[in-house]
Image (cartoon, rainbow, N blue to C red; front, side, top):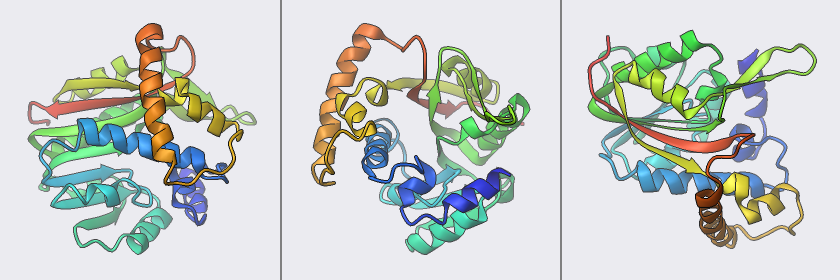
Length: 259
């Protein structure tokens, strides 16, 4: 069922609408989010050893194509055949390889220096499956390798349900929940960073409500920089929002070999 949704979204021409907000026709909101994600990844993740990198849930290669600039080799995996097909078409860099399937398709002998996952774990709905995923990631990383995730977190676990059937389709977990899961699978939390721009960013709020004329993509990064400064000033006062969700970067280091 889920693969059907992703395969359908892969047919849209705009690659950001494929993997971020499919309703963002203007493109500013998705471009804004893309800039924010890469800003935090470059600040907290890219500076670590740039050997081999695993992009778990790579989609159409939004992050893996960018990571190739900082890695000797990048491997992207995704369960959607249409996403993998499109990723291979869009990204011809010889330092990138794409595979359709889950983490188990890579086998147990392959090891990476670091791994990344952006807005993927929220689609893993059960505790059993996400704990299995954490274990597989641990098996695929070299000792002292790094795993970085970006997810939308809440103060309490939130289960998003389809209005017609009540079926859970998304889980927003807490930072403590992610920390617990990965700590039990041989990881140590090295850094936790809230990303407040999409909560308190002034420019983001205006873009989201389509109250700005279409901006040049060359101008947008400057407005994002303003929001980074403004939103962090608000975060120091308000801390984590009492309700709703907020993006968060968690950086883990593998400390022990997983079973």
